[in-house]
Each structure stands twice: as C-alpha cells, then as structure tokens.
Length: 355
Ligand code: GLN
Image 1 (spheres, helix red, strand yellow):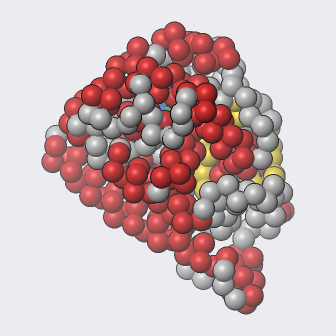
Image 2 (cartoon, rainbow, N blue to C red):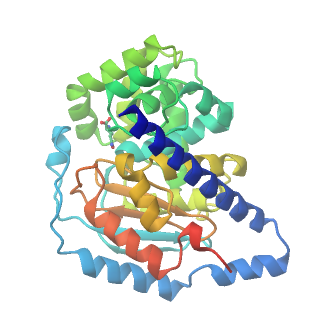
C-alpha cells in the first residue's frame, strides 16, 4: 500500500514540474516582445472556435445521465441533476457561455484554490508547502487516515485537512476579518460581489462532524494557529459561496492570465504565485483521479461536490462548468466530458503547446 502511494506520488511530482514550467512560460510571454506577443495571440483560440466548441460539447452531453448528486451534504441532493452550463472566459474579458451558465450553486472544494492563493499572497508560497504540503495524498478528500499517515504534513491544500488548515492560516485578528478577506478574494477573482448560499451552509454545518474531527486533528498536529472550531466554520462557509459556471470561468481566467482578472483588469494575485497554484491543481485538483484527468487533458482543474469544475488553460482561457451528478471520485461527469472535448477542440492542453 505505502509502496503504491509512493510511486503514485513520485509520478505526480514529475507531472507537477511540467505544469509549473509551462505556466511560468505563459507568464513570461506576457512580458515578451511584440512579435512574441502576436504569436501568442495567434495561438489563442478565436471567438467563433470557442463558441462552436462549447455549443458542441453542451449538445453532446446534455442527455448524459451518468453519476449522482452528492448527498452527504443533504442540501446538495436537492439540486436539480439536470442543470448543465459551460462558460469560457478569454484574455479580452469576453465570456462565452451555453446552457445553465448563470445558474448559482455552492462552490464547495473549488474555494480551496482561492483561499490557498490568498495565503500564498499574504504569506508566500512556502507557507503552503510548510504548513500542509503540496503532494497528492492518494486518498479520498476527507480521509483521516491520510492525516495520521503524514501527521498533517506533506498533504495539500485541496484535500479537506489541508484546506481547513489553509483557512486557519489566513491572517486576521478576528473570524470576521478572516471571513471578509476570503469572500473579498473570491469576489475579486469572479469580478463581482459573491454571497453565501445560506441553506447549503446550514445543511453542511449541521452534518460536518467529520470535518470538525479533521480540523481538531490538524490543530493537534499544529498545522495552523486558529481555534479549530472557528477554522472549520469558516471553511464550511467558504464552501457555501454561490457561484455560476460564468463566475468560475472568470475565476479560472484570472489564474490563466497571471492573477489579473481579465474582466475587471484588477491584479488580484501576484503573478509569481500562479505557477505553484496550478501545479497543485494539476496533481490534486481532481482528487484520486487527478493523474487520469491530467493524462487526458493536461489541464489544471479543480472540482467541487456541488457539481462545479474550474479549469485553467494558461495564457488562453479559464473554463467553468456546472452539472451536479458526480462520478465515484467526486467529479462532475458531464463537466469532465465537456472540458475534455473543449480542450481538444481548442488545442488547449498545456503539454501540447509545440509551436
Ligand atoms: N464542503 C465539502 C466538504 O468539506 C467540500 C468537498 C468537496 O467539494 N469535495 O466535504
């Protein structure tokens, strides 16, 4: 078992290096000569190609009925399984969308990316590596075994223990101050003021005994300084932030363009933090299926049990999808199919940029 985990982890580390290198390359291009910039623009997919690709994927998978809504958070089971929306945001801030792309739903684990980004921005990338690690655990996202195995370290900010500890590492003199920062950061990335889905927040708060145990355990391993009950409450609240596929596309595009929101023009995150963040999305963003996902798409992507996905094509676009039924790994079935096809149609796999 441990041998299996070790080999899995070393493969992931190799992949991460590739993703980080490419993402850094994308950032460097933005500072390059006009000729190079022009070349990049030629590589960016055109408006017609994007709209055609998302329409085709939406039509192809609209009737697909595989998967099941998450139900361990009771409110998520009540969301219509039929919703299906796709949105892509490009460098010029234009958003292309189809289907239920404006439908709001709880962001869930996708929030883990943006709170990790906030901690990187406030305290440096090293803080994430030192506090919770940047390695895939090879176990499910709410595994307690993984915490025990790694003593709360050498995990990553996208599994629940790492995510709760990441919230617990946001600086602030009160829970309200920390919460205001988390919500503002997410809102800045989306380019509009976001809100909490109160029924989902209450539903998860009433049933999150396991996350409370995880928070207490991570606190026992001294992975964060905040009161563990406060950290898990703030984490639950951040998972309940309402977003749409449109919002996720803009949030993804903010990362795709080096931390600058292409809709508002605001530099939300310093460019230097993006490659590391995308590397963790690549190795751990799709939980136990992260390797498989990377193999097929190469795209740094993060999923949430609410049915959302956010994908980042560095220098090209951000993509957001919403379709609640999940597969066994906890990832949206139709969202994965759609993004896989769109990445192929738009030649957006970061590992396939050879021109
Ligand atoms: N709030 C959810 C939880 O903690 C998030 C999990 C997820 O989206 N994978 O269980």
